[in-house]
Image 1 (tube, helix red, strand yellow):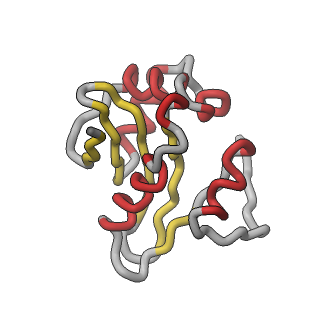
Image 2 (spheres, one colour):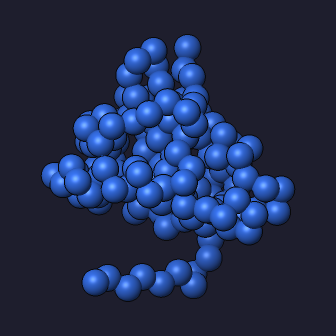
Image 3 (cartoon, helix red, strand yellow):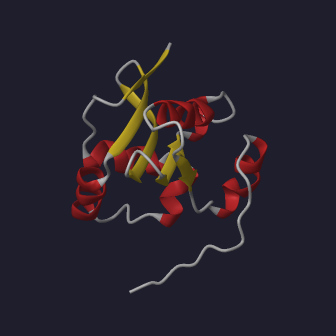
Length: 131
């Protein structure tokens, strides 16, 4: 049985291992443990999915809990994809946000169609500025 938590601590190494087992590892700094530690420490809403003691999914957000939540990462172990875990991670995230709070994200290329399928609206006005 899959369990979800916003209280179970996640180490950088656990997260890196999960990202490698998902398609998100292709676009995240999986070779930089200190960056992953900082990503986890500075996100203010993290929901994890567990199969017993194995981390199989994560939703990592930055939010004010009232107006907007930026869903920075949604990663699910490839062996568990297409079983509803990603959708449930989003539902668990929504449940912890205020009733008027929207979720904003940048979709990874391989996940672009997924978000529309679960109710997200496409917005062509996203911009990025890399250092």
